[in-house]
Length: 193
Image 1: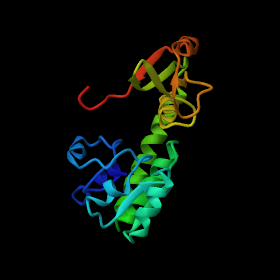
Image 2: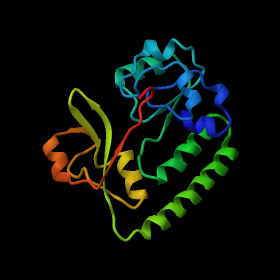
Image 3: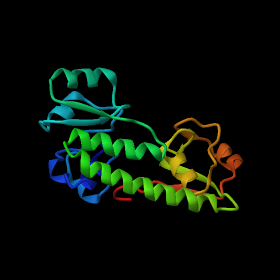
Image 4: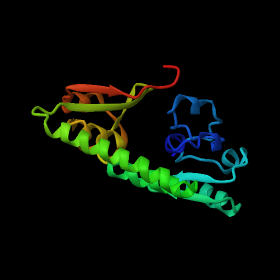
């Protein structure tokens, strides 16, 4: 949601971010309150927000309950990874910030861009098998499987996700990677990498 807030020209209202928000790069200077699925109430509340924007999958549930109990407005942004969900997220953030008209315009621009990307993807005659690597840690390779944003981006570009049979972001063995036979491997760029 931080990226959308910035795209709506409301970046000065952002006082913190979650660990996955790295764009635009200026947002990395904001305090990091942790990974959205492993939040602590103390971390979130330490920045004294007057509005909290969170994806539907934020958690753990106990932490979210404590945060909501403070009475600080807590807006849940839809969590979905398909390209069509982007416009819905933009509209939801725009409503939360009291900027529905700029959000509607941005959503329309995004939808037009997605339509163009789909047309280009449809023209691809030979689909590449793409493996998205989220991270390498302790000799384990974590990939983006079925139902992830990584898969949605691969498909939007006209490719095929090589991590079939893997749901979500999961570790994949070396043998499974060889069996997946990717034509292309994409790696998540990490800050400081």
